[in-house]
Amino acid sequence: MNAGITPDANLYHYDLPLAFQEKYLGLLDKQVIVVAALGFDNGINPPNRCSKKFGNCTDGNSAIEPYIAAHHLILSHAEAVKRYREKYQAKQNGRIGIFLDFVWYEPLTRSKADNYAAQRARDFHIGWFLHPLVYGKYPRTMQKIVRERLPKFTKSEVEKVKNSFDVLCLNHYTSYYIYEPHQPPSNVTGYQQDWNAGFAYERNGVPIGRRAHSEWLYEVPWGMYKAVTYVKKRYGSPNIILSENGMDDPGNLTFPESLYDINRVSFYRSYLKELKRAMDDGANVTGYFAWSILDNFEWLLGYTSRFGLVYVDHNDLKRYPKLSAYWFKQMLERKNS
Image (cartoon, rainbow, N blue to C red):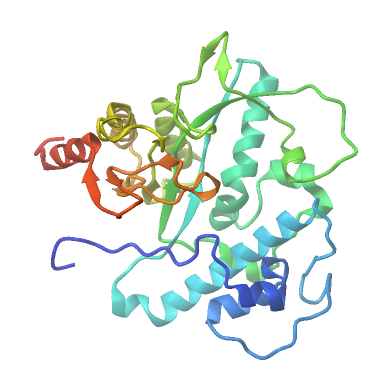
């Protein structure tokens, strides 16, 4: 803090302790809520699978399990927030929030069907978690489609879940076109099937944006504006931190090619411009994180993907600033940027 740096700690990022997974079957068991929130094992034996008492459903039903796990994750988050606010917040003068990923889903056409499909995608993506935290219930779209497979919050849980964040950390990288697939009802039920939405990456032969190395990542600056503005309007203008934003190059570029990352400079310039436009239009954004300062081990892509502002030599771990690092430094030093 004395150096002008405010730490932002991410307490949980797909890293549930193995012991929780082995003993409680992870987030499919409601007991994890107590254990995760309180930070210790209370010694209670895990209940039987699919117990109504504990709200478990670990019968291997893929149509139900994602909703059970997410429901328990939301409750676990609310418990942790409650504990932090009661025990630590006054002393630390800190804020607590949640990290949520949000791809912007743009209707492929102006048709009502495509607009409804895009809204379903938004509800099943960010609304799945943010709607309960703001309104105490799941989006109406999800309730209508998922029906009895979707858990419900008790009255006491609604009060605990609502407003259980001081700041919303939003991860945003890309945007897709969404269309109504006009398919007959399927006998297969599951999370992705419940969206009933088709994905497109071009319109009338024109790509939605330049593709980065990752096949899912397209450079769509206007999606940043739309995503942030959507959250502002639909969820009561929360305090937002852009917690992840960036693009990757292939890992097999030559060293000079990797350092001259002009595409990354273009990406950040265009996305930050759209973020500022959203702020000028009233979005309450108070922070931004570029992903990432260093080349990292990128999930299944491993070292074949480079997201960093700084090049990392994987042989000796030496670091070399890329063009984007120098651009970022100059941008941050500008008085009226």
